[in-house]
Amino acid sequence: GQQLNQSPQSMFIQEGEDVSMNCTSSSIFNTWLWYKQDPGEGPVLLIALYKAGELTSNGRLTAQFGITRKDSFLNISASIPSDVGIYFCAGRPTNFGNEKLTFGTGTRLTIIP
Amino acid sequence: DAGITQSPRHKVTETGTPVTLRCHQTENHRYMYWYRQDPGHGLRLIHYSYGVKDTDKGEVSDGYSVSRSKTEDFLLTLESATSSQTSVYFCAIRRYGTSGDRGDTQYFGPGTRLTVL
Image (cartoon, rainbow over all chains, first blue to last red; front, side, top):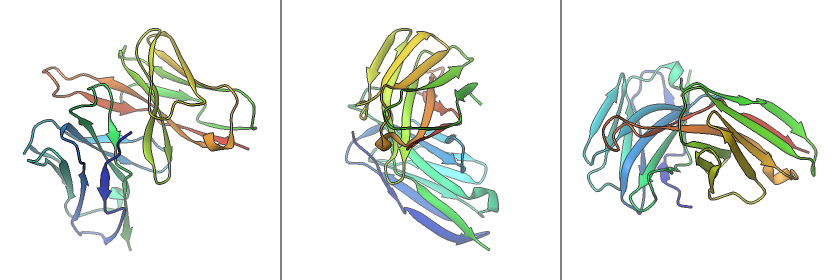
């Protein structure tokens, strides 16, 4: 199955810094989803995007559906300790059937004291 | 919170033994999924169900079977566990939106950590 290219794989930042991560694919997508996973727990949905160019915010988080429909971006502003975790992108390729998602391999965010 | 529970949450078993993991949902969703999560691979689909007794394979279905006799329960069975099946297993449901594709998402359970010795 196809997997998304998610970058960076890991990030080490200081509290208060802004964070950017992205996912890219060789296929056109009709949905992009961003999840966060804390240790020992399941992924939690943060933001969902359904239209090329769409920009959606959830508090300090902002995600965008790329206009080429082959990428998506997640930004976190003014990071705080509870932002630590693994962030996953997921999407629906247009040729995949709406019942299934394909996932990125995750970006691990660590805040340096 | 999508009302998803998984049991057990942790299990250690020996190679060759059968193992069944249970996913239970309380919101009557039609679609349910089983994924496994391994370092460097992200989440990979094992099997999914689109209704009672209706199931289909995902990308890593070898060595796994599933059953869905009730809407609320989706079982994943490892007929003869192998060390390569040591992983964290997540169940998910598909929640539809109210307008076309918009709102069509998946929500995950808390996971089951399985160790096969």
